[in-house]
Image (cartoon, rainbow, N blue to C red):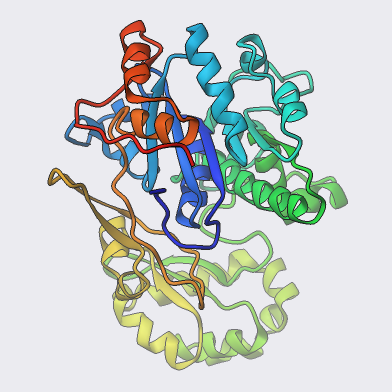
Length: 413
């Protein structure tokens, strides 16, 4: 039986030739949506399995966070037999997602161009640092590299301070999300035309796209945006403030009604009529003077005490939570954004959940991420019709690796 979470992508088989973060994040999204995801690993396994400091059994929590509801096969693509098995798996799947360096799979005789000629309806998605063409095509890239090169990292940090990477790996995660969107669009096109497509995802492209209005600001004005700190480069009352207890509170008073309410909440009604602050444009032009008034006002109460005061004026506000507070938040818990995964052998792990909620499609069961090679024999038997005796022979030759559990191989579908 195929491993699926819900029925949205039921019947869609994905071959996952990725490791680390961007690719596995993409394929986990597809698995969460109901696709059958077959993960192909080298005999050493996805290197994410080894990332410290936290482990459940032999696998890192890093790996467990991005590989639920998948099946793991171990195939050595350095062997002729291994490459042939991968080729056969490609042709038995609807989607291939890979994040090898451009040209690596071509060198192994697993060219997307050739395999798509053999199966025109195949959707192939390549995730790389810089895309399949251009002067940086062959350069290696990681999350922080593309954060830095895109200009996004230059916006992060306090004004006058050093640039810092985003606290979440947005270079990898954004590429994974854009890849999933591209795959879904290609599947929809295939539904209409019968033809697959090749989806070329560049991590740098994704970060450049996410410059959004800040990129447009520069293209329009020629002025290079500086560090954003904890505020907004257009709205001076859209930022964080330190409260009396040292905790940070974020407010987003970005309309005239909210500005009037903020003045009342802080007991500074006279500011509403101050000619320096009558409109957002004037508040922006006099933002340093405005902050000099607002900052000491916020220090008159503890951060949590400000929330009901601001909420009475319908001003969106929040504490800057640490992760322990965020995962315990009642709204996050209510929306089931913390998942507890349980393996049949007693291993357990808590991970972050799937944010895509359908009204009609009931959520499926989240499957504990697979151990290395856990499904090799089942997949080769069920998908390719390879009998267990032949799988055992391939394992002796080193072309594949199987788990030590007793295996029941079903006939090919």
